Length: 149
Length: 352
Image (cartoon, rainbow over all chains, first blue to last red; front, side):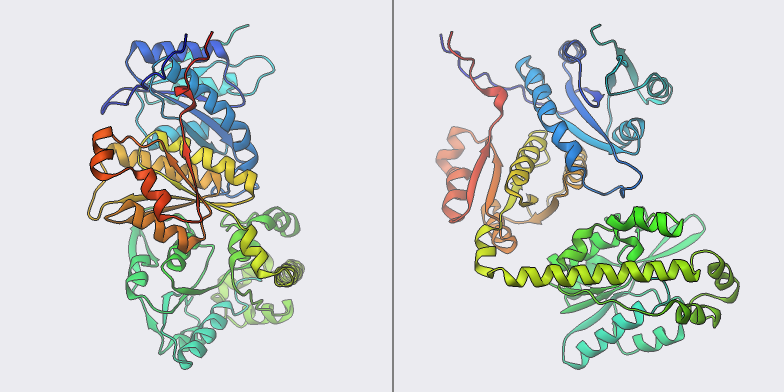
């Protein structure tokens, strides 16, 4: 049987926005959970790949090598969300550290909730210290999701 | 090479020569540093008034980019290319202001010290022990029609410093002990000479290549965006193709004259601008009654070879009444490849 292309969900004005900041990779269980939260809240999912720009580069330098890693991952996250019927508005953001990058995002845009992956052994991404900072400084409700073991 | 070697003076000299040759020249921005020689050299040249902004107790002067573009001279003299603008300015850096002036068809002569060049930032920090915070991308130097080295021996520069020709006496003494040591100045001079020599060599290689072949192989990508979430994907997809093609990338948003974006659209636009900085793309905002006409003009001005456009949100009725955007682009942009960026999540499930 051939299925017809689905109509994609359109973003409505004033819809809640859920930020999912990540770097390196995004665990599938974390992504599934974030999508479920977005669906339950009828929210727009904002997956944001965070880049760390070394101090040797100016802040407005392009980050080609890191962007190359971010692109396919963001596409995969977008597909997963759209296939689940959740509207997506993806971002790439950079900063001197991961927390600097995420802070830039919430300074530039409003979010109703942040869903952050907890640190996983041997994986890139937020450290326990970053998460403590996030929970202390985040301007909105923050949910930390544990990746699969 | 360093502050005080006479860059601003030389820029003004070039401006005066151009003026005497009958060109329409203005000073877009001048940092005279109360140096009498410089002030004298600027006399007789029209100055576009600066913008004054208050930052805490500090009053800051910035270049009024819009006023320079409105004045539309043939040549604008803009001092201190690596300068960081006051926070409320449209662009973060002066070189971005200069990009806008160049895009308006105005020639620019500017000044900069070698230590501000981004690719030399580490080397300068290592050689001099001073990390320079204000940097500018190397592409600016590569895109310049001509690079002129304003050279002075370290001894002569120190002499000028001692004579109070660069800074006031108290600041000059501190400078001589810190950044302006003979050793630092010699190293910076060497760096500057090397950079200019490399630039000359690279230009020589460019002229050896047949200009027609260059034109035939040069690719440039233009992504058509709107303040909408899907535009992030269009820009990312266009960037990936640009990378594969070794092409420069531009992104353009065409807005109707007088249209003010909603708050939500402004957030989307800011996010697109931030993305274009990360991707090293040029973000253009153009006003135009007709999207297709504006894209056609910009595409030919910038030498675009590929246009990336998202799947249009047109209804069938609108398409029948007004014609399809894609057909219009294909018709109006002969010689340019058009690629429609689909949403891959919309692909039908495979038959089982």
